[in-house]
Length: 123
Image (cartoon, rainbow, N blue to C red; front, side, top):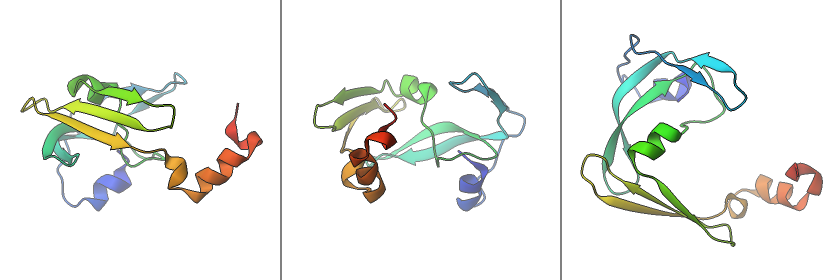
């Protein structure tokens, strides 16, 4: 989570003594600023608590990666139409949560424009 998002949430305390170095897909490394312990995230069925790393800047609000997938036993089911069902298990209660999703292209005019432009696809 970028620092700007953390700051917008109010006075959620940080643990600056818990710092990680993250390695990106391109093998670059970045040191995290700090961690928020037990940050509640709600996926529509009640809060789950997570340890959220805070970075200086990023082009996303929250990035859910392998630790999240592992902790929640995340499974995805993709369809040819572009829909995806995400199934999570709350690590605290064992409750299974199913989150249906739709392709972004239907919601974002910019994505729809890119999808029509062969050069923008990057393939």
